[in-house]
Amino acid sequence: MDRTTVRTFLSFDNMIAPSIIKLAYFIGLALITISALFTFFGSFAMMKYSFAAGLSQMFLSIIGFAVGVLFWRIIMEIYMVFFSINDRLKEIRDRLTPGTPAAPDTPLSDKP
Image 1 (cartoon, rainbow, N blue to C red):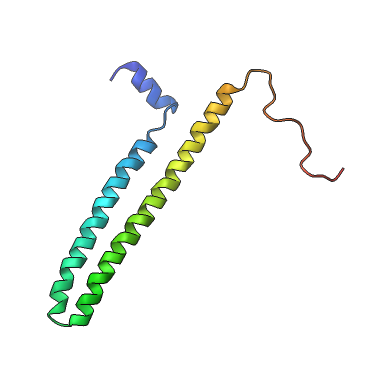
Image 2 (cartoon, one colour):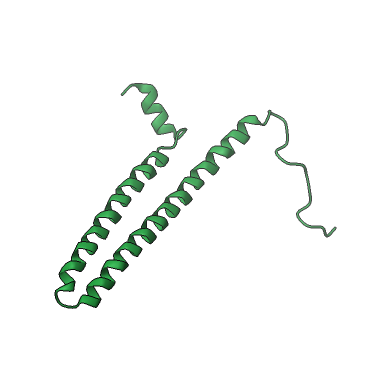
């Protein structure tokens, strides 16, 4: 590691969390898939004792997999939106010229 990499890391100019979030998404997706597969194949063992309970477990594992993947994706996208807001604010800051007000002076309410 050279000094510029360390300096960039310590200055918090670049966010590393978005790449960590992408990694966490794939790890979570793998865990959801593994748990759904265990539940699905476990339903066959359940069918030995109660066919209806095993069949219910089989269908619920499929539905749980779909819902789990959907909610996991939504949660990860919300985190990504937080970091994209930060990036957009940096772009706005960089586009403003020095001495230009960020917003016109407007009152907070319509009351005088």
